[in-house]
Length: 553
Image (cartoon, rainbow, N blue to C red; front, side, top):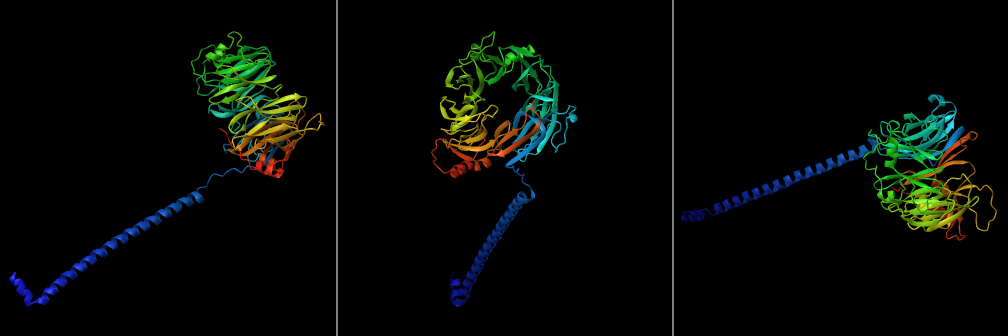
């Protein structure tokens, strides 16, 4: 200790130098450490920047690939109006709307009789070994009217139905056709190819009762089966056919009726019933009854059951169903109500809604001489209604929109009318109501002049304007078929007209036309029903032109 102090006293500057040297070394070390840390942070920052730009570059490559290299599916451009014309032909009273070529646009299927098909397919009756002229079945594109397929089908078409979901070995959607001579033919909906053909012996003076009834697979071949009803005199014959190959299952059953019959199918929760109605009676048979009569066997299937409540109201011997309004029945219609369906019974004087659970009457409405099958629509948002057309005097009818829950008349209109005019149609709109398309001739109050053959005018009515009709079209041609549909989901509302001579008439020009509804709305004539104009005519046209349509599931 003393030596150190002595050393310090002898060499004072040396001690200070040592301290300065130590301080300097410490300072250098600290600077080296501080310099090393920013260098590490800088390298980390550069890596992050590189990763960001690499990610951005990859994202741009993906966007570029999907935008330019990988093509997006082309959306079909639907023409506003198109025509298909056939010379020296007659057309059958049949129109179907189905997506044939799977482009998400509805197409049109129809049938005509001629010596040759369209020039685009260059088909003739001889291609199928048929005498000329013969019946052709054709599918036409909804986008532009191009013929998708065309096929000679039979000498004559007795009955035709499309949209059957399973037919043939491939279980593909198809059309079923009964031709002359009697042959049942299944046609593939997408290609027009014949899936199977079966000859049938239906006897003489028969009438087919449409539609075909699709039933569960009763022959265990994996494809749903079919029931066809044939009326001959006071009997209804029942034919069950395999949907896979068309072969008849069992033998024809025979049901006794007391006159010209029509049939209606009612699906209950646990069973299915077939109602046959004549001028004076209503008969009810379960699917189990029909299957047992055709095959002579009992089959344990959930759908082949009987409803206890219905069986209590059916005479076990005659199979007559006791309903309040079972005489003079003109139409039966299904009216959805919650999870089940009720039955609307339209007789010669009244319309009655019947509860399918207990067969009790829910309401009754005076409606004499109803002209067309009841049609569903929405006058109030999401409140189901129905359209009834009844003849009130010669060449005069009343159109009523009726609330299905209560039977109250929500709106009505009187029109001049002539036999053979098309029935009404409805299209659902985005405001949860419906646009109603009506045929007739409006006659203003006070105008007593009325022609013997009223014109066929197409009108549009929407509940947003209860006092307005839009006159869309004035047709002098004979209209064979009319239907309206959304050709694309929730858009492109159109109507289709099939015009020309019918079988039994002199052949002539047959014309098939599709027209976008908005094109007629923009050029329509506004009719004020109560003579009180609340808006300008152009404002009404513009507002209804901007109306959007909606596909209901």
